[in-house]
Length: 216
Ligand code: DX5
Ligand code: ZN
Image (cartoon, rainbow, N blue to C red):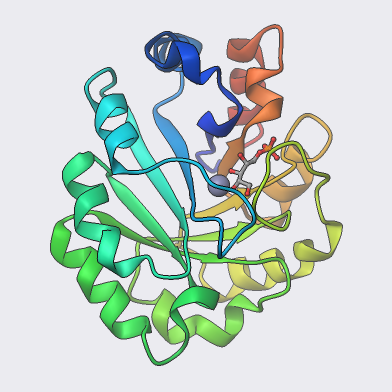
């Protein structure tokens, strides 16, 4: 039996009632929350900065899993960590092969868990050396930038191959994960499911979370 966690993606929450939404996630049984940081350059959308992460931190004890969709994430790593990020993901496409060692050591030096994120058309097996030095991988199952997009089925063989190559690594999937797709990605080896619309759009988010975590 594998432990599966659902991470509500706050991108789909009501930001005008952020403290209540954080509370709603905790009451529904979440232990980790996913925070999407977009810089309007790496992706065509602009969202959350360290100030808002600090505001979240004041209202929740849950693990803050921070997904940096930024062309230049490293100058901001310390700020996000000080704001309260527990785990920080950077995209390998933004860092590039020459910057990867520095990125990993810079995030690790803050004390945060280190995560590497991969766009749908990036092969994570090209980054195996780096993956052996980090705490988690995240495969995007949509092109990053927006919530509510359709799951990209073509990522599944990459997920299966990554699970085979890294049997112990926590593997997160992000984008289009819900009642119709969660079973498939868990079967493929995902252990953490980021769910935006599927969680916040469900009339019974606790029921959804319990169902998805029960797939393990
Ligand atoms: C997309 C973000 C996701 C997004 C997922 O770029 O990284 O975390 O919130 O939303 P859903 O689950 O609605 O596809
Ligand atoms: Zn995300």
